[in-house]
Length: 501
Image (cartoon, rainbow, N blue to C red; front, side, top):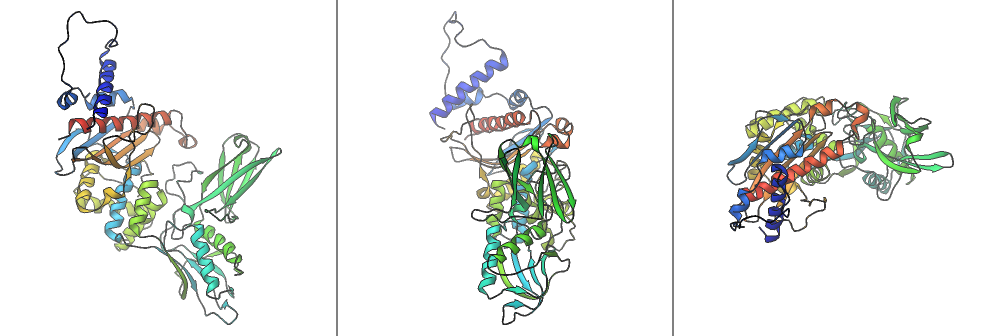
């Protein structure tokens, strides 16, 4: 380790012990007798590290903190604290989901979205039958890809259809939302289906216009902003609640409190009717090419006919890499359910599929505490111990390239600024819910050795006291999360010193 790092850790450690032991400031007065010189060696740095229990106590998180750290080479467990206690993993669960999907579907798997014609194309470019936008579950499908499909359809000579324009989402089971305990308006809790667009989110933007507001709802991409009708917003003269949602007349009907809007702003809202949403956007994009389609209709049965256009997702390895980076809940649910279906198991939704994944993981890795209720970690009833998560990651490190798919965890100084030259390199998956924080992954030490670890913290009593309305930004939640992340870094830095070769 660098001298700079040791000096910083050395001073931090002395400061920490001053607080813990109630010591007087170092410059309070000269000693009465000479002090024996003390070695600044690596052994000394190891000896003065505060115990993990002291770091946990200082974090003042309440609830329960569990961790387990081991050698990534041998699997030897080096240090634990409440490592066998099942805790909510939050989005750390996505690491297991990624492994599950890669194992079952393979890293080169592609999702496909198709345009199907149920009849022949006549000389005027009119399909004699229905035209169907058929989803294949692609969690990465966006407005730009739909625009490519519309352009290809036109290039192939299609100008419309004599029948209806239909949308099919039956490739995967439909769910109105991932977790029913979330506030209705949070974009990370959308519907799940076999036809998904823009992570099943709609862009809501508002601008003050005199005493009123101009609002838009669109399916925007980098270059396109097609307006959306299936999701509607109405501004109402109130201060709370900020948002309300209702399902009426086949639409997502939203209201927003005028008193909360200020001068303007924007946010993504969840879509509850993803197939109709995608169909409406495709209808608009097709019209721009002169292709006339009727209002989309949801079809239940799997469509049969000629495939006119197909677009593929990126390979699964890229999809799960981005899922681990951006922690997209929709992606986790889709790839997990798709994997369970590929195993030939009956699936009615995320909960069934999660049970199948639990059994797979318990068999693959010899786990005993894994009980997930979904694939994303959004549901706070999921449980796994730090010991089991560490063990799974250790085995995955030996068998797959999952470490390379994980995002770098930035080490920060006391002012929360990133330390660019920090000697420890961490690749890990984070997980955050209100008063729940997790981190699990790998630490590369400067001496070439590697650690594998899992840290879970949860104050479930505090979380349980929140109303649904409070769950987006609860009082004290940001500060609790900051302390949890500071504890995670403190533990990692401790391990980097104590367990370096």
